[in-house]
Structure formats: C-alpha cells, structure tokens
Length: 98
Image 1 (tube, rainbow, N blue to C red):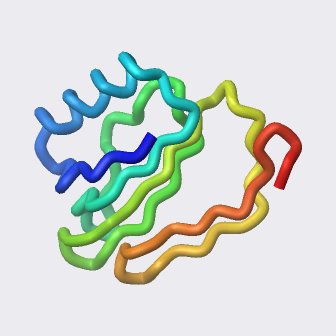
Image 2 (image 1 turned 45 degrees about the vertical axis):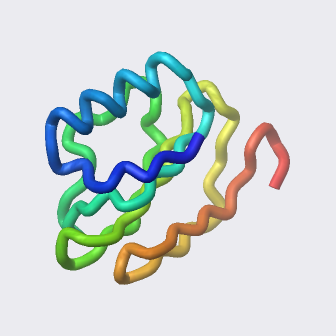
C-alpha cells in the first residue's frame, strides 16, 4: 500500500494513518512526503510494523518511509537512502526471495 501523506507531523494525521493501516492490514506500506526532519520519525510506532525504514531531509520537507509487517518473512540485505529524503531503496529477502 502506498500513501502520499503530505506530512505526518500532526497527531491527527498519524491517527488517521494508523486507522487506515489497521483497517486495510497491508503487508508493506510506502509513505511519501513524511516531512520529518532528519532527527525525527514516527514517534508512536505502528503496532505490528517493527521493520520501519526512513529517509528524511535536514528540514521538514520531502521524506519517505517503508514499513514492513512483522508477520512477513523479511531479511534486510542492504539499505540505500537519499541524503535529502527523496528515496529509500531496500534490498531484502521477502519470503526467502530476493
């Protein structure tokens, strides 16, 4: 599932996102335009998605994230992120397949 969240700094937006995730129950979530600073991230982790990866910008602009459900057979091989929060590339094994 992919969301263009247009910023997640508002608690209301995070609550709506968590509600949608709980309702749809996706295995992998792609978030665009998170607008977190480089030292920030989703402060309240989303239950059941402990495999969470971010690429954030220095200022609150851009930013992407990938969340992978705990029940997915996941193994990270490598992670490549943009220093300005434009992309996030995961090389991984999902269900024993690269």
